[in-house]
Length: 197
Picture (cartoon, helix red, strand yellow):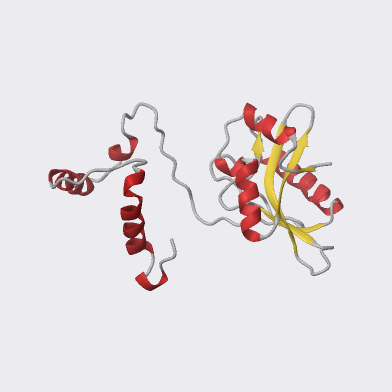
């Protein structure tokens, strides 16, 4: 069966062998599934050489629960593979995925590809269409002692120096300051009357 649940060892075994992100974790997929009212699953494929998976959430789309769709958990899990795929291999993989999802009764899929791991450009087909929503910037962190400040503009560097001179400083995991953090967060992202953090 190509669609596995979160307890299947093939999911975690592959994660132990490859670099991955939090989007690929069974626990992350489970939390997102709970939030949107679905069931966490993963499409797993092995051809004897390469192993691949796509974390997904199965959602019922009819009152009878006979029809369901698949959607990526929030973020960019995409296709995680033991060995990189070229565009032709990825297209064949998507065809296999489509066939196996149809056999399982899924009527549609929405998969968010990982912009760094899955930078393929697919030609549209009758069963598959890819949308591009802009580029992604990646920065190599090798050889940079403080990668964030390295990329700051001169204006930002001056502002930070002025704040430090005025006694401001950053705190990390200082749980005694959580209430002040929540107040600052509410002021910057929501109106005062809608604060629910």
